Image: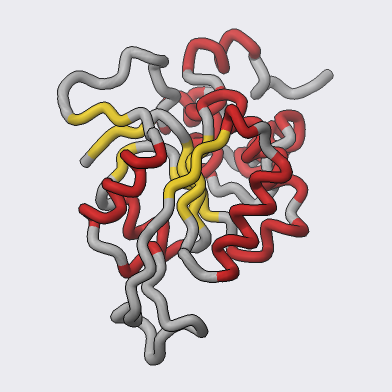
Length: 199
């Protein structure tokens, strides 16, 4: 496992699953072309890019490059890095047939190839050792103490918080925890008192 400071953007859930076995950090799936119409997710990605930088890791087919191009047009270049996988013909094990262009996507790549792609893109990688000295993370225990989980109105409280922060409404409790840790960290989030109900 490697720790990566930047948030990494991938196309779909299988890409995220594959990358999660290599990377400890924030990995966001954009849901393919759904990103083009999802203003909330684009705003979330802009906030992540500003807070920690973004690495785009899409498939090397036409669809991957359209998504890459969309993100390049929305996010300042100094906040964006591009990781490219090689063109390798084949099909992923879970698929009955190869993709339209016959190339392996992120989910079909060897972990060593993905690591090399991230390194070439200039990812800020911290191998093993002590945890990053950046910020203490929020925990599920914090969420419970703040009433964001474990209460009858927790889901509504999370929805209100997500709306105040301009985060996508479809985030799960775990997704919200990941987003808050990527954007704020524990101390800053608690100091802002953003979880409190507005009067």
